[in-house]
Image (cartoon, one colour):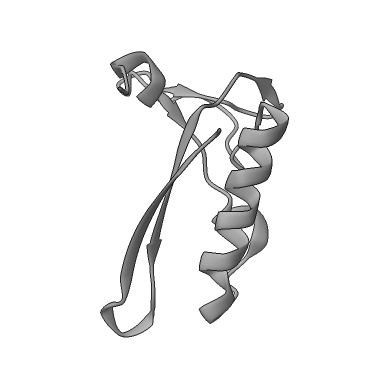
Length: 90
């Protein structure tokens, strides 16, 4: 079961990788699985200061250690192709 405290981390790999067309889903999936395996949450790129009105726990400018059991990838592709994948650590 996923608790609300497990859903409070916001990350983005896409800005770090650029737009790789059809390969974006594969890259995001690999990066998500590696982050879960290594227990490191990557920072979003170009995120300098928190927005005071948003109550989200971003991981700015540094890696953050966390034991990640379940991770999710949202992929919105060309032509309206959408995919959401969840990965669970065994």
